[in-house]
Amino acid sequence: MAEWIMRQLPALIILVPFTAAPLAYLLGTRFGRPVGFISALLSQPLAVLLAITVMREGTLRYEVGGWGGPLGIDLVADGLTATMVLVTTVVGLFVTIYALGYFGDRERYRFFWPLWLFLWGSLLALFFSGDIFNLYVCLELVSMSAVALVGLTLRREALVAAMRYMLAAILGSLFYLFGVALIYGAFGSVDMQTLREIVRADTTAQAALALMTVGLVLKTALFPLHFWLPPAHSNAPSPVSAVLSALVVKGSFYILVRLWVDVAQPMAFPGVSTVLGILGATAIIWGSLQAFRQERLKMLVAYSTVAQIGYLFLMFPLVTGGGQAATDAWMGGIFHAVSHALAKSAMFLAAGLVLARFGHDRIDGLAGLSRRAPMTAMAFGLAGVTMMGLPPSGGFVAKWLLIRASIEAGQWWWAVIVVTGGLLAAAYVFRVVGPFFSREPEGIDDLDLDPGRSPWAMEGATLALAIGALLLGVLGQPLLDLIMVSAPALVAGVTP
Image 1 (spheres, rainbow, N blue to C red):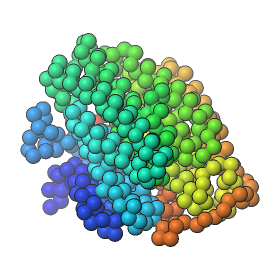
Image 2 (cartoon, helix red, strand yellow):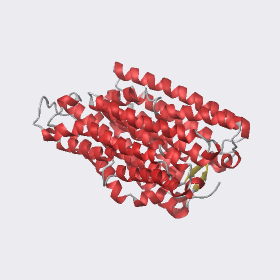
Image 3 (cartoon, one colour):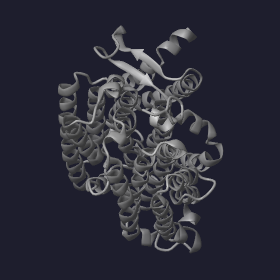
Image 4 (cartoon, rainbow, N blue to C red):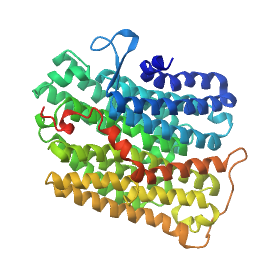
């Protein structure tokens, strides 16, 4: 039995949420909630088992239906896949616990559970996909589920934000699909392992990769194509905001990493990695400044996401040089994706608790919050430590690795951007956290949570994510080892 589970592990991980999603829909709100919770619990040991197996055996390949690539479909799991699956299941569990209290058993939110579970399964399938067309299919499933979740409340602002998100997602998908068509027409394959060996830097490949990159940058909300993210993330229900920021934008980023570090060697396409790095640096500065200017807590956290996404793209120009700089940049970029997922989900969940309990999230009306909601204030503050990159948080480790890679590569200007981004993050985090802890309650009308909500479970889930992001810097070595399992040749120091 154990051997069978090991062989079927990639398929089982995907099937858990995909099986639970239709069950949650058919059983309705009353029974859909426990279905979601049970599936979240079942996913945890499977994700941990995958990580352990990849650490021991290296890359795993599962042939769907016995037909492997390039004709069939392969599910592939290396260190990067296992890392993203692990963080998705951990964040997914605590968001699920939070959502049980946030939505309660109110019938108007019955569609949250099937949509959330379907999005979860689609993300997992994306991380396992071994060819660029199946990546497109999974990305579309993720986007459509996310759009529906943004508009879940049916409020006018949420519906407008969902429509804007949908149009951006469709446009990004079209660009990506055109690129896939060009790749297939030129090279006769969509399997990433095959393409890694045959893709060459001709005009067709350059055009295809350019189209795919633009589409994915739009879906990742990298500056200046971030226009859809702040309204979508700030107007969605708080559990949805957490998922969008922590996980959904990481799906398209994951594909970009596969394309530019794993499939197409960046050195064969000069300039692309530098452009991505410049856009990332601009996102850090612009997003941080915009976050500082916001008057609403959720909008501040949304613009913080724009800024934090920028750090992910500093990895690209640093990876291209090879050597130790490439290794540090690889670990720093992926580690930042993980620490950001934990901290940012905690921030959005904390903002949701504030909004649910006090009826508003105006920053100037939340002075003294720590006296009324100490666990919520603490969770937001601890998550802010990770956003700033202070030790011993996971954000500190990620930014230190990026700074070290910049120095090793002789590209010191990226290090300056990282440090500047940390200082700007401190400015907008302290703008919120300072009044939380330094003044008496001022203008806060405590409405309490609606009947049926479970504040202890919601606050506990939020605080657990924030503490996890903090402890990641101390206990993160096994994760760094996992990230390096079956790393791309360029990162591992092998000359292509």
